[in-house]
Image: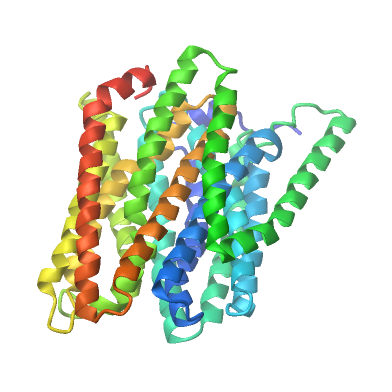
Length: 498
């Protein structure tokens, strides 16, 4: 069947954004409601409902999130080679719905089984919808960063709603209902994509769909079935490895080097120009590990910090759940400022003074550092019981969000710019694999904070945690300065890519 719209027609759009971006925006928005709603519940649920200690809960959080992002590499690989982005997205969404349904049925008895379905499902969903956004643009379209900033706003509308609603519903009413809500909105995400996918033309179709012969189509179906069967077979393996964090350690020791070796093999198939771009991509990937290791305290140590050491008054008059604020403040600020940052990049580009991508990454670390210095400063607003200001905590998230907006949407964009067409899914998967290592490191750092103050009073916990946040601020500042210093070298590797 002939596609109704061609890739050239999609990419030659008028205005700031292609119309197809909006359908991907809404599909991703609801998927992120599901993901961030569940993410925001994990550590608190494990401590209060599964009765894990703080150290164990932080390590479990890091392990779970690490597997979520590690599987994005596998999902990107199978999308590139067999399924295509559309089938991968649909299959991942179905697995996430099943995982949410299992958790809604009995989150205590089947916690790790439900989480494992969600892990594998996210691996197939997350990298491929981001890659399709990149495909809406021609290689050097200056509007690409703005498009990813808008797409990132969609991510965070879902994260804002899910991050606050799920944990609040779980704490006040029912954890069954909270996990079930995540599954309902994931279903909305999938329906949204199915209804609007015709407008994508050839984008996201299987790479094996080039032949019209019946034999080729039959072989393609068998390849698809093999991927589906293999991913289902992986679920009990993931369940075992997530439940025992020692297995997660072994997995992370292996998957990173193995992925690098695979990339080196792929690089041998390209010329020196493409190899230099891929080397530049690896620089961004390496520093993103450091960034996410610091940033992702939000789901671990900051979740426990919010539950124990924050008051519930914003601006002195608005009563809010501190855990809800921890889960959603970042997303609210992204929604407010993503469009502004997008317009800033477009305006600076028109005046030919836009900072290059490496400098943007450096600025991300400087903002991140400022945020964690403010987290440290919350100790100066505490009362005698160790309860400190929700206002200062929220202000810290404003700076952290500015850092995220300088790195994450730009990182999604630069992976699509630096990658050859046949490696875009793999490189997007590697970008999210870097997030896996960041999550893994975040869990270890959070566990270290909790271990140091396991039996402390609230005031002692406040001092222990904020001391560690100051150290993280220093690490972020050093990383930002290093990136800005090496920017000219990385720019040469990037060549014409900006």
